[in-house]
Image (cartoon, rainbow, N blue to C red):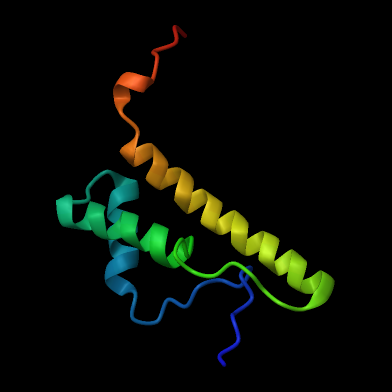
Length: 95
């Protein structure tokens, strides 16, 4: 059975040039529609590992790795939640 990678390690960038380019274009405010979709999917599925298994075995170290992985998933789930939230549910607060 393959071992889950340590969730705190950086993701592999091999073969991800188009994904990274999409993220960079989005950050500059220059991403086209396809790049915007690609960047968000890269964030959710690769960086946040939203659909991955967050459990890591191994006692206390496994608990810490699990908590870290679950934090990554939580961020991805919050992004998805906000993309589906009806704007009518939000109030404009005066500044």
